[in-house]
Amino acid sequence: MSTTLFFKQHFWIIFLLMSSCHTIKRDNPAGKEEILALEHAFMERVAERGLGDAFVHYADENAVLVRNNRLIRGKKEIKEYYNQQQRQDIQLTWIPEFVEMSSCGDFAYTYGTYLYSVKDSASQESEMEGIFHTVWKRQEDGSWKYVYD
Image 1 (cartoon, helix red, strand yellow):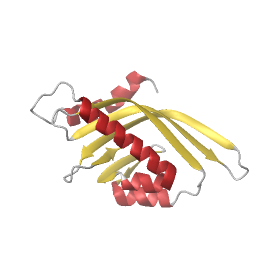
Image 2 (cartoon, helix red, strand yellow):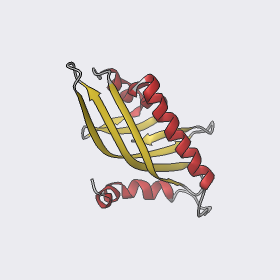
Image 3 (cartoon, one colour):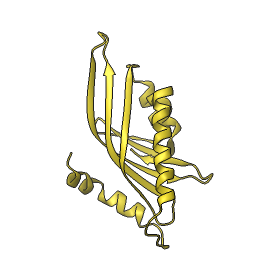
């Protein structure tokens, strides 16, 4: 997917989330580092505990996933979706190439590239590369959960 098409598809989500504050901060390097650390911890949890555990753990109660051209809404549906997955030999890694945070620090988004690999029953590995986009929301306890992935 081209960068232009990506932004056209996600413009309104990004615009609404990033314009939600009245206080203007032009740059927030510490906030961006916090989000990069969060993305790294998320990826480590995928490697250690699997996709389902990680995607449920980091999901906001009302999170939305887009998978196979389908919306999966809410933490309960996300858990059900991953519980139905049959393949266990899955690896997912990603590189956030861009991070932006709202001026009041309660929303952030990242995008970059990912690599998804899976082994079939004959141990043949197949890989898929793509672009990811995640929107993060700060929770009342100060932690971050994704609201869109």
